[in-house]
Figure 1 (cartoon, rainbow, N blue to C red):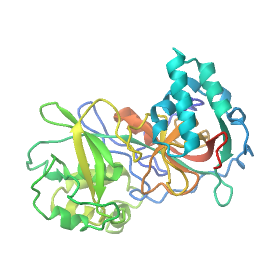
Figure 2: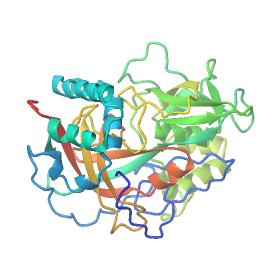
Figure 3: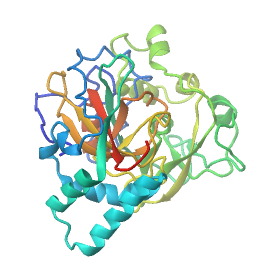
Figure 4: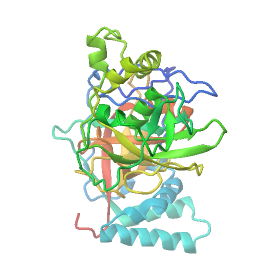
Length: 379
């Protein structure tokens, strides 16, 4: 029931993961820009007061989780079964094998069987922040953009492939230096501001002039830190201090396309390289190497979680201005991101396209997380 418990509050569509309502303009024929992480937008306000400590459920059944009875256990079971092979520890592999056996011998798998699978196979361990307060849930999606197969005056920024011999952590030239070298192996051509935002998001879908579509997925990076451009834009008077939304930044870059915009984007030295494949109609791969599952997968901090971990999230949006829903349910850790840091921090994958983007931009919720640990595990 990930989107269960929704509390409609007449909100607008926010397009930045900050506390302001940052609306992105979109229409049926114009790809929308992705929601902007906190580093790009203005400083985020403090979260609401903690809703109280997470219930002490250590070692108890998932049935003790808040909201467990309202979960769609069958949908959660299908998501786990589709992704559990990325788990590396023996106990999780055992539960994965058990799930596969249930799918093969129970046709169809019933909601009650799915619920029994979780309750008999896992125990609950609460994740905790240093001060015992809530963490943070944000959300992301797979955006869609126009692209060209050859450059022109408007579509003049290349989508570049992973450099030959690249290794993770390798430090390469900064953005401005990479963009200053004429490309010989461009995979596609985009508007400069669209490519800039797609690099922030990490992936996207491209629609070419002949109507064909492709998926652009993260392939490598230049090893440089991410630097936001909202603050310098405000300091230079290019945008008002209270108007550095994702929409405003993108509009300014589009209006000043060329040397001015490139100089501003160069303030962020980080550069992302992509792999471009035909659009299969599915979802992009997460860092775990398998396709993300809309509304059932999250990006986490690998310092505190492992790919394939089964996680219960509880994020109440009832008192948050602009929140469209509360989010509570089982998800799988399948991705990560440079802004996702800490033991109670998650980025919730909404899906692809405009509707997913509008909802993703409205998520900045206080978060509680519990790990579902396979019974018999030493973890």
